[in-house]
Amino acid sequence: MPADARQGGVKRLTPAQSRIAAIALALVVLAMAYFVLLHWWFVAPLMNVDSQMRDLRAIHAKYAAAIAEQPELERRVARLQQGGATVGAFLSASDPSAAAANLIQRATDVVAAHAGEGAGCNMPSKMPIEQDTANEPFHRVSVSITLDCGLQPLTAVLHDFDRGLPYLFVNNLILARSPSGRMQAQITLSGYLRPATP
Image (cartoon, rainbow, N blue to C red; front, top):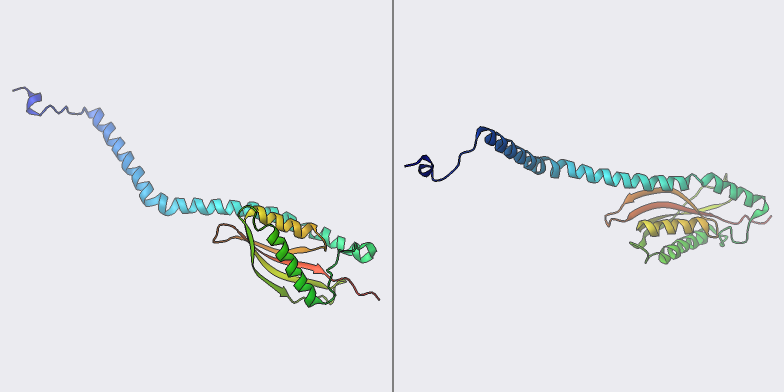
């Protein structure tokens, strides 16, 4: 009986083919081991964290540049003191408590105006902050607010705070990614009372 018939028609691999098959099988096993043991447990989470850090760095740099404008805004306030005040530059209320309430209402109105844009925007917390302004030329009124917004409406809200009347100042901006995937911004929003006429 022929040898091929005795072996059931199975053709044996040559030594070179056996080596190639062994190398290919080893590569497949190594690739599977990498994805099962390393990639999904270690590499993928680190890549995700790195991506989030890059996004937050870019956003932080953008708003750090806006905060860097604070000296110029303070110079604007100083010019107001020298007689260049426009009618609506100061907070309308003369009492700090009433001014803080008006400031919170102004922030609420601005956020509501952008609530339907992009990923939306809301203000989950707001509260007045006691200020010691005894050594300042104007009485400053500040409120602490938290914004939970998509990037586009957050930018629009901060722009409205900066460009409108009365003059408002955004201080202590802290950004983080919220559980909803939007940006959470903790800010101090301030305005100034009109000085009493002597």
